[in-house]
Structure formats: C-alpha cells, structure tokens
Amino acid sequence: MTPNEHRFAKARVSNLRAAEMGEYLDARLHLSSHDESTFARALLLAAELHGISYAARECGLSSESLRRQLNGSRPLYLHSVRGVMRVLGIHLRIEVIP
Image (cartoon, rainbow, N blue to C red; front, side):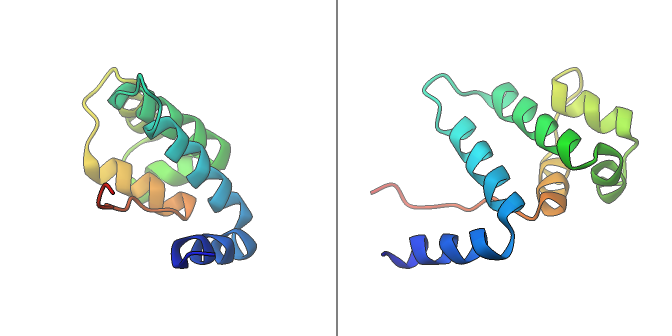
C-alpha cells in the first residue's frame, strides 16, 4: 500500500462520510467532460446532503447565496469552495502529474 493509499484508508476509518464525499467530488473532477459547473453542482449536492445552512454560515453567506454560487447563477469564489469543503471535512490537494 502506498503512503497516499494508507493515509486515505485511515481517513475512511475515522470519517467515512467525508471520505465518501471526497471520492464523489474527486470523481467529478476527473470526468472527461468536466468543467467548473459540473464540480460546483456536485459540491452543491454534497452541501445539501450535509446541511446547506451550516455550510453557508461557515462561508459567511446566506443559504440562498451559497446555493446560487454552486448552481452557476452567480460567480463561484474559491473562498466558498474551501468553506464548503471544510464543512464536509475534506480539502483540495495539488498533485504532480506523473
């Protein structure tokens, strides 16, 4: 098992819901036809499953404002993406392409 796989396995055991959300969002990012709206809508679904009002409060927004950002009717800001992901217990990571 590689160090990354081992780390993910540990995350899965300690926070299964976050691990599942991370897998779901990662899969959306790796779709061949992905774009920012695909990822934003996936993040919206995850936030709604977790509790969009809580996620919005963590981002300093109303639920409706966050929903508009994530459904594409308003510009999506990195601050909002990071806030929702923090609430979900996951984060973005940059990796070198092999």
